[in-house]
Length: 107
Length: 269
Image (cartoon, rainbow over all chains, first blue to last red; front, side, top):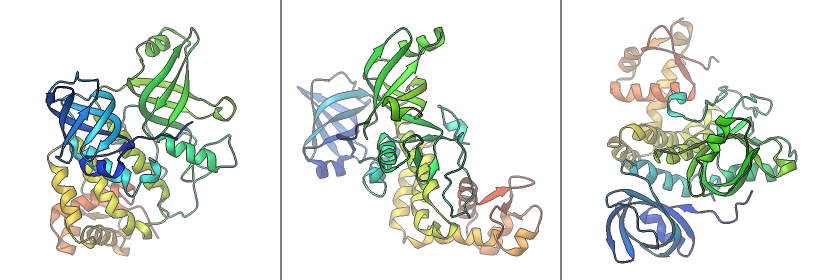
């Protein structure tokens, strides 16, 4: 068992608290711009995802696991297509709980 | 209610809310959704390494959701590491027949899976045993698993009904989420309105409803009290009273009797 490098559940708001750290979030892909994907976070902020994996279709939800390298930007290591049917309100709520009252269950 | 939402096996929450004794000798047939962090913390802080006790509950089986990595397949077994974002844990899945091997064959590195397994033997072999590994098809299941872990943690750590007022705010938030899983439109407003209201109002209604149900007259009656009577007595909106009743049924404080409208308190004092 190894809990040495957890990935923090974040939304747009929480991303800026974890600069330089490994984070995970789900965004809805808005557009592809060259080497980066622009996505909308579960709390309606625009985030930029830089990384090699650009295969998630526009309007699908994409989970990004990577390092937070800016207040609205992530350098992605793994991107996963979460399909088109994803409950952003639940995910957003989970981010708040996982970073708030129940942080000890996650980090 | 739990089994319909839940793919990997039923879990039993032992409901004795007025007992302040930790449920260490309880039900070893429990199957509990957990995070790797929870398991690691429980394991490292316990002196007795052969059993897993999380939040005072003796854990039978565990459910985890995460991403597979380092998968290695052999004729008799498959081993892999599960990374759920809170930590990594090694598992082995024994392969006894064709069904087992087809189950493990479809699992690949980078895939999200749900695992039902046992922690038994971890102390000796440094890996847990997986009984069932299912690929996740609807990714909302990942969110659901973590919410269920939080919920189970809350259930197991609340000691008495009296401390409910502190945890009720989180319960209200949580029940908004579980309903949000089925109806994406409503929980945003529920969550926002819960936060913007004064903390007192939601918890007060829940407490008032429970108080009515715990009155001697309600307890004396075989089939408890009708929802409408509670509404009339409190003079509160029926919707709010029904919400409070649903919550209390959920956590095991009350139960329905002769029909879906009569409720009785389970906490006979």
